[in-house]
Length: 151
Image 1 (cartoon, rainbow, N blue to C red):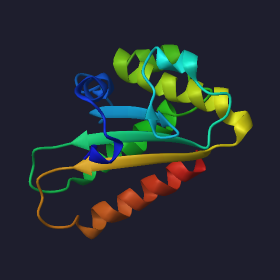
Image 2 (tube, rainbow, N blue to C red):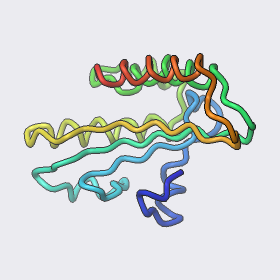
Image 3 (cartoon, rainbow, N blue to C red):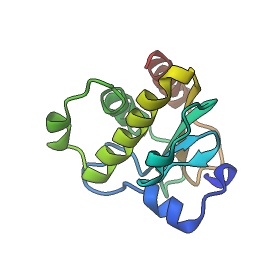
């Protein structure tokens, strides 16, 4: 699911946030002009950027698509990606690594906003299904896409 970004094993592991209170997100990675931004790399950000990309992954071993997966993302992502979010409130029900990775994205967004970069949020829902998602799952995915476009 992540092969388009050519991440090494350490970078893949850095983005894994799976576990208790993961808000339905297994992994999250931020890229600036196609380069993955690690915890220490944010201090070396360029002053201008053409593109900022956030990649969010939910991976399941099931052989079908579940509406609840998309519903959970739709519920949590708007709050996690809100620039004026309440960190203390989120910390009560969100794991620390997920909070840190979303904070990293928001910080980068704020730092580079003056260069008016293209911002893209890509949500990947991966599983072992051979068939396409049911129309209900697709409809919920479309609603999530519209909500993220507003952000």
